[in-house]
Length: 134
Image (tube, rainbow, N blue to C red; front, side):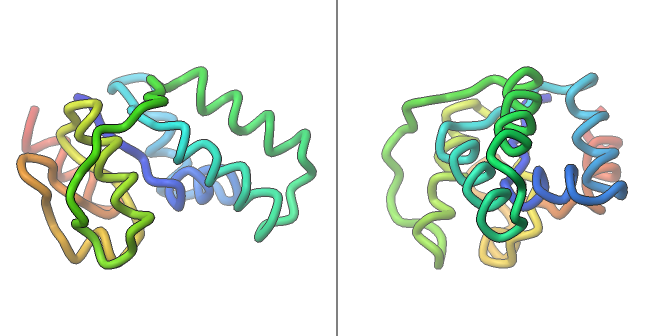
């Protein structure tokens, strides 16, 4: 299955050893993680800014994430969809990759529940979603 892991899920995967860490590891092995330059840039910016990672460590995280993902550098234009216009980039990434779902902790995205055929779920709901489509 193709899926997008939102920036907040990727950050949680690297700052704690919980659900998001397990999810990243599992999806890197069993699924195709679809990301965009937007998500990678946001990941690096949040790690170095909000979480005070040294630039070299943030670059290592981005390199690891990139090595386990398919990256889209050009996203299709989409009509405004989300309350937060920045989140439209996450939706566009999922559309570019023809994803089954977006995994996120972002309430603005989760409130949408789905965009077209793309289901929007939180990390805890992923396992049930995965089982249902298998």
